[in-house]
Image 1 (cartoon, rainbow, N blue to C red):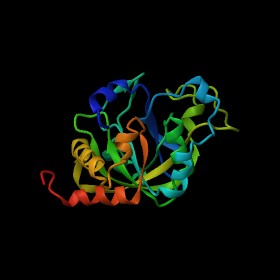
Image 2: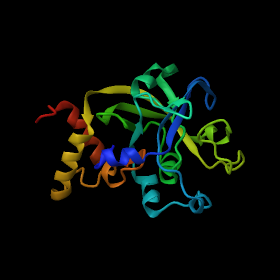
Image 3: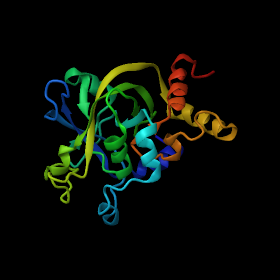
Length: 238
C-alpha cells in the first residue's frame, strides 16, 4: 500500500464499506450485500467543521488529473460484524460489473472523488491490506459523485451523525470493471521504481502511492498512468 507498508497497515482504523449498486439500470439505488473498502483515519472534530475547503493541491487535481488509483481489500476481515472484503473479483461479480465506491471518510480522498473524477476516466484497482499488495486491474468511472448513503444509516459502521441529507458530507462514485492487468504489479516493484525515479527524476518520482500513502483514493498524472500501465508488458524480474 505504501513505502513502509507493514507499519502503516497496522494503523488503518477505518476501512470503507461498500454496498453493491447498478449505475446503469438503477442509478443511485443500492442493492446487494454490504461490503467495504480501505479508507483512512477519520478526520478530527476540528476538521469536520471545514468539510468543503480544498487545498491548492486538491484544486489543481480537480482540473489536471484524469487517472486514479483506488484501494480496496481482497481478503476477508471482519470488523464490527461486517466482512470488509471487496477485491476486484468481487467487483466483477456485481451486476453489470459495477458498484459504488462508498465508505470513504477522509476529506482529501472525498474531494478527489467529488470534485476531480469525471465520467469515463480510468482508475487502477489496488489490492491493499494483503500479503502481496499491488495493482490488479483497470476500472472506469461510470457515474460521477453523489452522496454516500452510508453516512445517513445509523446501523452502518460509517454512519456520520453530523451529516444531513440536505447537506451531505461524504460522496462516492460508481466504478465499472474494465479488465485485469496482464500481470499483477506488486507494491514492492513500484517502490523500487519510485526510489529509483526519485533520485533521477523519473515519471514515478512523485507517485502519490508513496508521497500520500495513507490515502485510499489517489490521483495519477498521465505520465504516471502510462508508465505503470507499460509495466504489465514487462517481466517482473527485468
